[in-house]
Amino acid sequence: MQNGIFFEFSKRNVRLHWFRSMLAMIGIIIGVVTIATMGILGNSLVLAISESLSSVGDSIIVSPHTGGGGFGGAGGGGSTAQLITDRDVEQIRRAVAPDITIPVYTGSSRMKVGSKDTGGIIYGLKQDDIPVLLQVDRGSFLRGSSGCMVGARFAAENNINPGTRITVGDKGNLRVVGILKERGMGFDINPDYGIVVDDRWFSEAYDQKDYNLVIVKVKNINMISQVKDTIDKQLNRRETIVDVIDTKAILNTILNTFGQISTFVTAIGGISLIVAGVSILNIMMMSVTERIKEIGVIRSIGTQKKEVRRMFLYEALILGLIGSLIGGVLAFFGGYAVSVVMLNTTKYLFVPSSMVYIIYGMTFGIATSLLSGLYPAWKASNLNPIEALRHE
Amino acid sequence: MSGSANEEYIIEFREVTKVYPLPAGDVVALDGITLEIHPGEFIAIMGPSGSGKSTLLNLMGFLDTPTAGSLFIKGRDVGGMSDEELTRLRRDHIGFIFQQFNLLPLLTALENVQFPLILKTGSQEHLEQARRVLAAMALEEPLFSHKPSELSGGQQQRVAIARALVNDPEVLLADEPTGNLDTRTGTAIMELLVKLNHDQGKTIIMVTHDPNIARYAHRVIRIVDGRISPAEGDPPPEA
Image 1 (tube, each protein chain N blue to C red):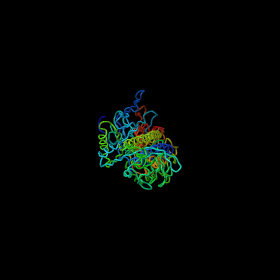
Image 2 (cartoon, rainbow over the protein chains, first blue to last red):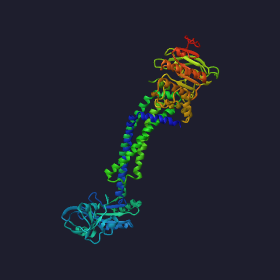
Image 3 (cartoon, rainbow over the protein chains, first blue to last red):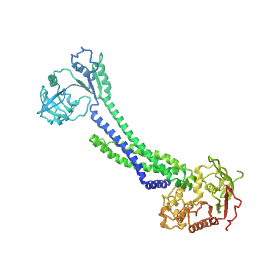
Image 4 (cartoon, rainbow over the protein chains, first blue to last red):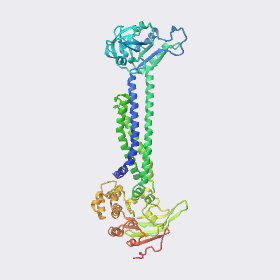
């Protein structure tokens, strides 16, 4: 292969000027590592968030309308907190069947665990609804109205186990029957830092008949916006009494936002590649200037312009290839480090959608080098052989 | 531009003019040169600096094309040829020998000789041919793998001549081939050129301003102010 000799030329030239070649490569390495690591971080964040949120991505949340304070009358009862009545819940239930409708009481209270004072959120749920929303980690689900289940974080912080007793304000004493599995952030309820009690107990203890919140679990996630519209039409016919949020839409907004952040951060990596490109352009121009005479010689003994061009492009390619390979390896470790430090897990690192950023980074690295080599190669090939020969 | 080219000549100049346009005014480097070179001739081109002898050599080496007039190689008109065609002509028909040897510093002696072969054949398999040509230049085998910087001037010029010969061109163009060598080495190089001319019938065109070197040539062409001086064809005065 004729290319062999030109490649050999380029290789030896890179080796001869190893120090400045290395400096140029460092630029490429940094660029590749930045792009790939930031890409991996962004992707891992999106994955981590969508995983912790996706369990609630199939819900519709109906909450009392909070705008404008209402026009009085209409069942407000003088209380500042608007609630959802039993009648409204039934309306929702009928409108969305066969999807499951879950009315929820929420409140918060000071609590006492043993002799320790603490506080947390209290959710009142019907016993049948609890398994739909939550999973038990230890112990069992709620049976009877004098027990409670405890969120994972709340249990861990207060050393709560099944059998422990919790005193809820002045409302009485509850026996812990189960510890819930950690659920992560949700749009509906966040029981990790609270307790779950029977709805009848809650209603009695707080003398509250109407609900704070209604969650609708949608079976077919593609129907979610239609279900949402049905609820909206059914309840807000004359005036807006409830707000209806579709968690899938929120989820998408959040994921989009994170996607944009990660794109932005990756673009910053791109800037470092541009800088690397400029430094390659610089050393390639030096290489051309130093070798003007040599170019004159090889042109005069019958080397074509395109062959000279190829020789210099190879040089850029070698720099880009080595830089990108080293960068790719380092980016892997960088991604590992970032995952461990920022997400405390590496499970999002070894997935194709993260790994592909290493390929992206390397591709951009090689492309940047080649692009930077274009002008010097063109310049070298267009030197006048006579003038080049005369050059000292 | 009248008449057809004569294929009997290896190189033929017909009314060739070369003008370099400069901001301060055009410089006429060659002014209506007509010249025929037969195959197998050994020619010395002499003249003061700035006389146009380098321009003449550049035209013969197809590194440049005439501003006016015609230049033929083996009856083919060079005028209007593309850069690619001219480059091919240089590769296949011309061997260049430079005053400063101009070997490629990154390549070994043998690779330097191989280089034009690779350009021509596109293959690196002709190592034997390169080796043979280099050996014929009386360069010892152990030196083949040396870089030019590790060779003496005489050795470098032998490598350079081997490089010029390896594609078996009809014409060797030598620009002050002994200019950077001591007298003894210079003489050895000149004897090598004479032998190539005599044994292999290579046409040799050599620029020199050393009359002792010009003596090796069959014919001396004197250039003064871009024209061939009338003394053309005379044997050198010392001879």
